[in-house]
Image (cartoon, rainbow, N blue to C red; front, side):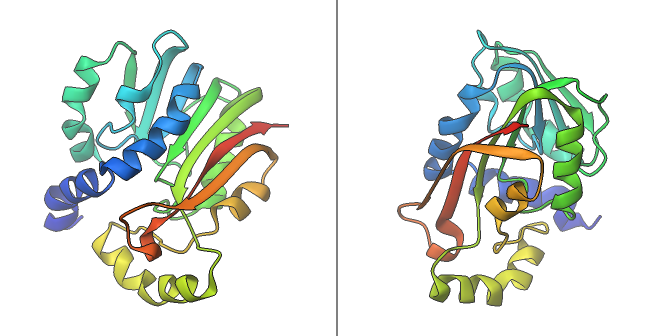
Length: 206
């Protein structure tokens, strides 16, 4: 891991993913979490303040970056929700099968190297009837925007820790046993369109 990835990137991502418009997206899905919760890519803890302590028994955050987790400590210490961090990969979740009630995935599927495998792991650890809560930026439906997303994707990924600006998030979920219950999309205000097309919603394990 380079100096940039280890020391600088966590701060860059914390700033970009903590913008007001993005935080409002998190607030649309994270409070719906209940029971034993898995958060993929807990990172710097930007979701922590949105969990409802009356609904959540525990949050287990999986993330490969210990440096990002260190930046999350203030939010974690102020939370009324029990939060446990486990270093690990989304493609190989260190949890037992059928042990999770809710999986929270926000601004993470864009960066996971193998999102298909990661979603298969989410399905494995979910209990029957368990829910997945999603908020992500995604491939835009407008051809002119998608064209530029595809053009800048390689450069974007190098600057943003492997983030893909052009992933079809809904398509990835539809290819799993998860059944989408609610799904919405919009371009975030005051955000460049190539990075501003956002999708969010819920899906249940069939």
